[in-house]
Image 1 (cartoon, helix red, strand yellow):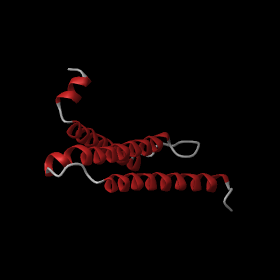
Image 2 (cartoon, helix red, strand yellow; image 1 turned 180 degrees about the vertical axis):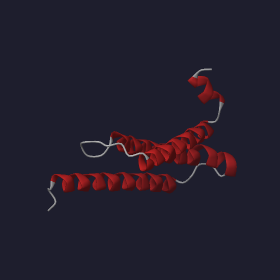
Image 3 (cartoon, one colour; image 1 turned 135 degrees about the vertical axis):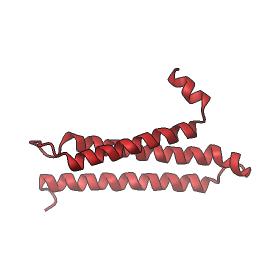
Length: 119
């Protein structure tokens, strides 16, 4: 069975939900591993911490995409009201960008603190 068959034969929203559940469980397992198994590392943070962060960001990005997809496809099918007003999609986009900029700002602040530039 090919990947294209899996995508085309099922609802994309349901498929994304299953993928998100798998990513969430992997994120929890990786987080538990990082918390309970301390691997000594010489420079900065261990590599698994970066993998944990990257997996979390991918999960969040896919979750936002799934919400947007749900507003565009499922909402009209379930409610029969037609498409969602543009304000809802713009609000979702603004919320996504706000979170992105907040994360980027925190990352830059940590980098500046680490380099000693912010003092």
